[in-house]
Amino acid sequence: MTPRSAAALWGTAVTAALVAVPLILRDRLPDPLAVHWGPAGAPDREQSFATGLAVQVAMWIVIWGFLLAAAARERTLARRMGRGYWWGTLVGGGLFVLGMGGVTLLANLDVADWTAAVLEPWQVVAVILVGVAAGLLAGYLGRGGPDPEVPADAEPPRLDLRPGQRVVWVSRLTNPWLLAVTAVAAAGLVVVAVLDVAGASVGAALPPLVIVLLVGLLTTSLTCRVTADGLRIGFGPLGWPARRIQLSKIDKAWSDTRYPSQVGGWGIRGLPGAATIMLRGGECLIIRYHSGGELAVSVDDAARGAALLNALVAEKVSR
Image 1: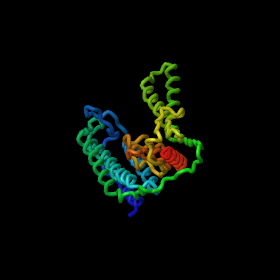
Image 2: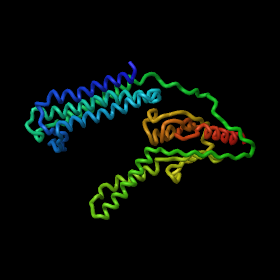
Image 3: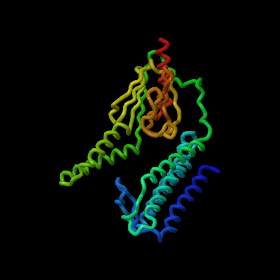
Image 4: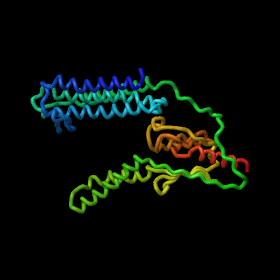
């Protein structure tokens, strides 16, 4: 059975259960239903039966649809880590949604009014633990075989430089999704400022918007520059802050195709000596240090940058 077929069958089964069980128990449930409980265990939010059912189904449909779309892209399941994440989310996410729907129904079952619904904290903990455990097991079993390794002795690309020739390589990359989030935060700050001038109390929205804006400005784009001094990686529209890597620390460089599913997501992943700067999946510039560590940076035209780095490293060694 292919992953897409499995996702179609599992998703249909979860959707059917989310719809059928509440309808079967409809006569034993109050309307509206309690759907949220406070720290003291008392229900503090309600929804009509139809709305509560629609919200649960919609939440699962979003997860399921995302996984189906991801499976349709062959590169998502081409790597071992991507397969692990995909299967873990499919099984664990489905069981979590079913479990939360089940404990909500159980809390409301046979009560006269939603205010009398009781949800035991251990039930929520149990649902989370079962979902995580099932997701980890599914990811482990579905991850498949190891990814094919690039031969360590593969000849890295290298430009032919004439004696005394000086060449500079510059490439810039912007993540449009992160840029959109940053733009929304900036627009939100403008709205907050206008409302504040008008006398509305919206100060609570200010800190998160400022944080999102500042983080977004530093992480939506990067600029890579290769010169005789080495590699410079600048963050944000101004290329600052920046990380500089001297030629004397670089053993060799090459380009490779990598995706967020391989490194654990977007952003800066890993630890110093084995890190990845991932703004978008696809072409990456990879450098290996003399110490044995590696750094991967998602950037366009990475092969040319790697070739120039290798040429400059060789030129420095030959002096």
